[in-house]
Length: 206
Image 1: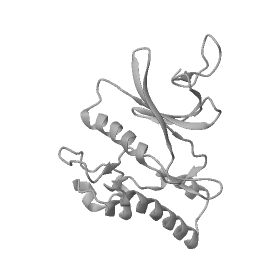
Image 2: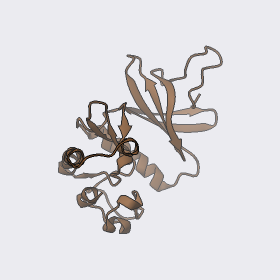
Image 3: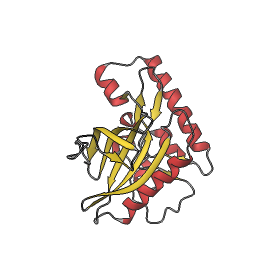
Image 4: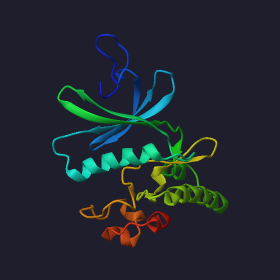
């Protein structure tokens, strides 16, 4: 059922928490997978599933809790809305599910594979992403995404942008003791981020 296969008894897609009907897998890798689903109102949502394995270390647990806590408090048109989170079990496997607003479109990596952007188009993208970062960095305490890159920016058909994947997020009020160094994506990381120094400037650099 975790792959979206029909139930062997009713031949219908699996229903999570009695509310979310899985439609298809959008992506998966490592300990996580993302599904397209519909809720009981017929609204499309993205369901991110994390496998809660015995081998998960404290940093991984902390990252999951951090992503959920931060997303619950965000309110910006360029950031998918938090909807729900819950834990469930399928046989011996335990999972944590994070449900968010579904954003249909392409990420900027996919856009760049299909077309070459003009300078005005690039500047317009940068300006819109900067407004998202201004919102995050103006919060108290500031929220730092730490993984700004083309694949984490979705563009809808109408051209509007969304910043996704807050799995590396942190806020500046967090204790940095014991934090994993170099969290993020190497090619987009600010030099100081490689050494664990994280400030809003790191997002601007990316």
